[in-house]
Image (cartoon, rainbow, N blue to C red; front, side, top):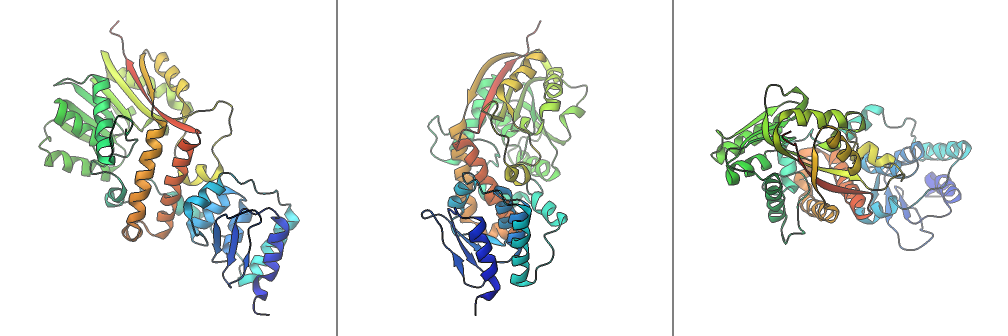
Length: 389
């Protein structure tokens, strides 16, 4: 019998997953059809995929197997939609053992992926070259939500609008001393200095980001107006600023430190100064937490809070909230732009990141977009004043 290697495995899968909104094709040419419509087709390239799925049934197992290259969908977007909507049945330990044994017999598999391999796949955010980010970001290298809702039709124009919007909300004036918390590759600092004549200090935890930001500022003739340092915002001492911009940084603070974050920024700001806090927030109160796939692969170093919690921390620190504005649809479109640009340059991206991390990033961008499209998350700009008395 030519397909005996997967016969037992196919039989166990059909028995334990009677409702399958997907088709499965195995490494030996056999397949299992979808039971309800035209869903994605998953190519199981190795029995190791079954181990990943059994270790974490549902979105985490599917995502992990894709990252490892053992489970490949024919349509990644369709597979992502299914992954966030399908609830797999609970499989008891006896059934898990039978599936594991069937997978092992399929190709002599004995051991699952190591924790070290999983850890390497998770380290996907900034542990990459500047060139990799340049593949999908706009020319300003702005790695945060662009603003399309004011009439911009290109990613470049939408990012320029976002940078200028932050400057306008801060009411920047020539000579203002500005702190850019989490400055990335320097796009806001360079814009604030070149267009508004501000003097800007940008801080980041990434040396490659800071180095490229310095080079870009020098090329723009702004080396005497803009400075970039590799440091934590909590390490700043003895300096005060007229304005502070925190763009895409508050997501990394978390519940335990949000009040400290707000107090520290208040201490760094001159009385009468302004803060613009731009960050992702959860929407529903009492809703489900992020799924295990998102927690492991999408945002492992982040904790999104409700915008009300961020505002509370700012008010406790002495800020007066002047304006709050949401841009959920803008971020969904921004992520679509990034996805399209990355997908157009997959060959070069794989050369820079390697196949596993590239797969993580393709999943990450789509999962993040899904959060905004489904109203699980949004993004808000909170404009604050620190009263003079």
